[in-house]
Image (cartoon, rainbow, N blue to C red):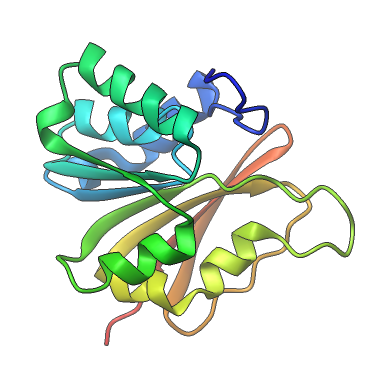
Length: 175
């Protein structure tokens, strides 16, 4: 874990394996966006399973350094772009480029009742829909007590529970 990155909760291998097994061949050739990338584990896993490229975004300089080191160790740096930025700013900047077919997001969990969930805020972010192609997928990790309500741009597909973690799958609506 990067020094000074106390909020980084790497996705456990069991959860990561279940998510990618569930996605199956959707990963092959996908243009991947990994938000709140932390160590880069999700984006790197997507690349190792056949994604064509990945953009990994995290606001922490130590996380970005760890992502770059992990990409180099996996020899995947040629197919990845690492962005050090706040998620909202990054989504606005990415809006003018090619759209992503698979978005992976593991925002910090809000475990306090009544506190706004970053997962819901991300789902509600109109720029997220702009950067995702119609029919593209969003895989969103969040705390088990979060009840997510997708806006019109997203259709709920399914959910997996892994202890305190829920993984919700959404598909970008057409148009």
